[in-house]
Amino acid sequence: MVKELLIRALRGERIEQTPWLPHIGTHAAQLLDVSAERYLQDAELLARGAILCADHYRCDGIPLLDDPQMEAIALGCVPHWSEQGPPSIVSSPLYGLPPEQVIAQFPPLPDETTGRWPTVIAAGARTKPELEERDVALVGIAAGPCTIAYQLRGLALFTDLFRHPESAVALFAYAGQVSAISARIYAEVIGCDIVAINDTPATMLQPAYFRQYVLPNLQPAWEIIRLAGKTSSLWA
View: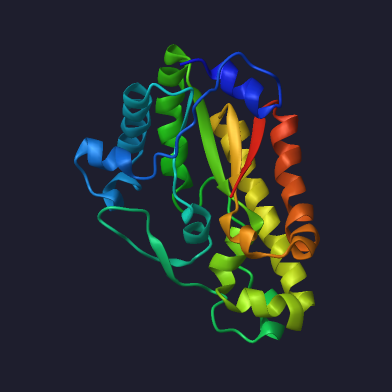
């Protein structure tokens, strides 16, 4: 368990051995013998789970929270909770709206008091010193702009890209702001060593759309992570 190896690898340096950063999902809930729903909403369980997984996996970095719906729920999306896995989004403030009404209905931007952020911040305060003793990097995972835009708009997002590009441009810019807020909380408030932007839905976009809609709206998060002196990563 050597977090410096992981940080150097993510920064593109040549290193002497391959570090390991696992996805933990809700495996910690199973190790703790609690439901995923309870685990993902309890600061003490999140902290215990991250520490337990770090000890079991003997890895070089561990996520504090591995839930792609974190930001969406903070924005007013309605989750369906699961006993065994992360929640799924069943409705959103922007589902079913005509494209011309989308911009006016953007939810208020979140902050560290919104949604589950107080829980995650409390979990980070418990987890960070324990991982430092073990020389394991604490990793924050922020949802990327395409993930947030998709959770808010649903499949209509992909139609908006070519039929209503002005709406899509505004939504991706808004989603990039949300990603940047998450990155700031993980980097500055919690003090994560690494902040990853997880943007799996972006893999469904053709390269030109990725360059137009996603790449510019990743930059605010990257800049926040850089200025905080932390290490960034992009996951898909």
